[in-house]
Length: 225
Image (cartoon, rainbow, N blue to C red; front, side, top):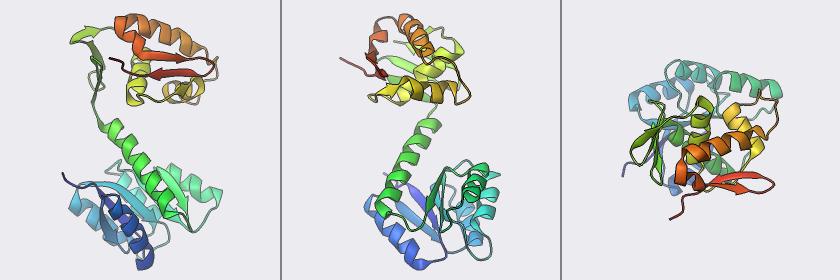
């Protein structure tokens, strides 16, 4: 099995070694760059970098420039590493498409945990088809099959089902579902979730039982034999 590649970009060799050692123990292949120009070269040479850990303050080309350049061609997850912790820097990073922002000094174990969480999210996002308990969701075709037979869902029902399948076995509050399916610009009653879940359960027929109600909180999608 081919190892997941992570590009670590920092002009301090001590910092690169620290991060490399923790990531290598977890089974990742680490590619190192000591400046921004080298990072750009390696990223396009390797072609299969799964995530970038990117320092801000570097010679030749800083982290912001590296991020802007890569974002013109790729949505690869980027975690910015910086000794600065000002809000304006974080906002700049997010506006450039940074996925996470970690301030030095940091706990290597926490950094690795963030790396793993982002890779899990990006893996789910890149998967075009999800299957569980006889339910198949094709995100590209916007199609849902129940035991091979297509069913008709509204746009929000489709988004809701996709979110459930991507978070199997996880208890999801109504607020969290709203924030992820309806996005943060929704200011209505969180109970709208209940209405959509009821309709979705009905359309899923006997497989609607996979959507469990967690009283006083929300829902959990769990396939039961």
